[in-house]
Image 1: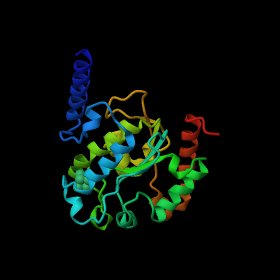
Image 2: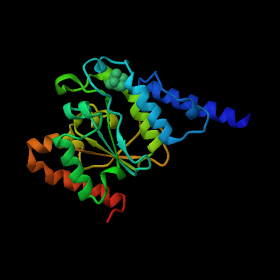
Image 3: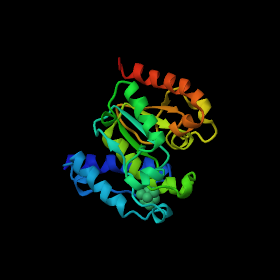
Image 4: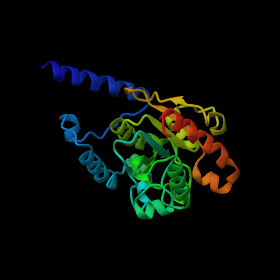
Length: 229
Ligand code: SF4
C-alpha cells in the first residue's frame, strides 16, 4: 500500500510541476504506470503513438513522424528544433547535410552516432522548414520530456536557438550569449541533475563555417565534463 501511495504522490508532484510549465496532456503507456517498463518497448509504443498524433497542426503536411534514434542508455543527447525535408522523408533525425555534419562532430568527440541519442523538440516537420510555433512546441513537449526522463542523459546539447530556448527556458538570451556555458535543466525534477550545453545548429555551420571553431570548443567542454578522452 505504501508503495502505491509513494507512486501516486510522486506522480502528482511531477504533474503539478509540469502544469506550472503549461503542460497538461501526457502519454503514459501501461507498462510505465505498472512499473514494468521495458525502455525498448516503451520507445516502440511511443513511435506508434507519434505516427497517429494530431495534437498540433504539424502532422498535416508531414510524411513521417521523427521520434529520435540512438542509445537508450546514452550519457549525451542532442536535441534540435524539428525534422527537415530529408528527415521527414526517412523518419530519422539529422540525416540531411546538417545531419552528416552532426555525425562528424559526434565521431570527432569519440562517440559512434548510435552511442548518443538524437531527437528534436517537435516530431513532425514544420512546413517549408519554418520555425515551430509556441503552441506546437507546447503540444509536443511531453514526448521530449518523456524521452529525457527515460534516457536520463548526463548532458543535453541543444542545437540552435529553438531547442535552447525550449529546454533552457530563457526567452531573452540569444544563442550566442548562451552557447559554451553549461545551463541547468530545470523543467523536470530529475536525479542525477542534467546539464545543458547550448551550441549552434549544424545547419548554421553549413552557412557559417567559421563558427565551427566555437562549436568545437563547446564540444570539448562536454567531453571534459563527461571525462571523454
Ligand atoms: S509535432 Fe508533436 S504534437 Fe504535433 S502532431 Fe506531431 S507528434 Fe503530435
